Image 1 (cartoon, one colour):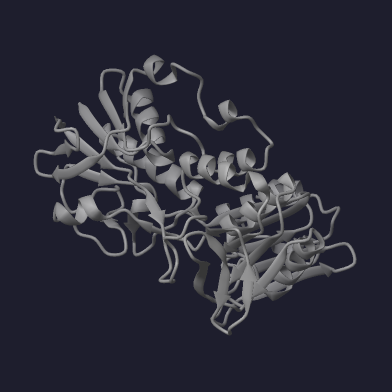
Image 2 (image 1 turned 180 degrees about the vertical axis):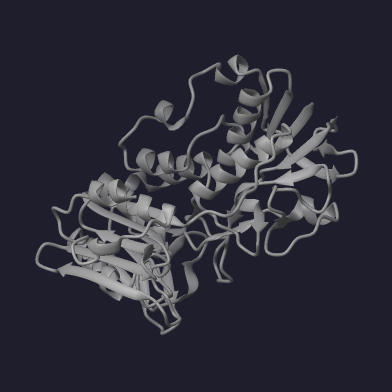
Length: 405
């Protein structure tokens, strides 16, 4: 079997690695527009913060791909697909044909419709090259505005704060930080913590223009207020890279549409990760990309594995503050039970969302203790039974629940 994988991010790399584990004879070709070998994107935050050197950004030691017998071609841009063969045409004039084609092309940063996004000093944060360019530019310590108060925007703010680089402001269009992962109480605690670090937060506010002549001088909000800035970082989400799939005639919605076996509308073409839309969802999360890549690899190797979806899980660590959000944390319909424990004096907040007798969502804020066990409860759907009134206690022994099962 000959497989071409477009993209050497998490989903592409895990797919290739898993195929090799299952099939020692497969010919696996991974082609990437990026010139760098695979690196986990969270490592970019640690590198930006100065916590790790450049060589530690990469996941594997030099020569790993060769030892795995993976043919990795870097800095090569795919320009068109022939899904029926399948085959890929590249910008250098070359063409590759295979038995199966995997689209793991990921996503690109979403650029909001603002005036001035083309000014010098405006950055996105998606690739290692993005980070290298940003670090070079902010050496002088300019004031920095981050557009987006989601996970990425706050991780960037945390990293820049660790470096001690200038004044940092975050602008979030929603009324609270991490609107997908937190409720009002959790977001309020997070806001307090970040403001104590010196990070300025503008929630429920929206930018209308990036100011400056050739170079950034600040941003203007829609209400007229201006925020001075020598650099602006756009962290407003991502958009799946659909150009190749659309031109090839593959079925696309917001992403490349795949079935439960990660197959696209063409029998010999598959997709996984941030580019894939499964059952109407684009996850944009590391656990989902990993799960999809593994399932896809098994299916390619003739070991049928159905992908049933991934329960969303996010973790944020900001200067010693621990936060985990998993599953459904803000139910809008009736029929759910909410359990909470809130200690504002110590910054501790725990929330469980129950359906029947099972935990289907949780916020764990201000402590790591019990985080793994709560995540396991949500993932497994295990019932908590008689422990409902004790489970939020700091000293609760979770083994009692798992022993009961």
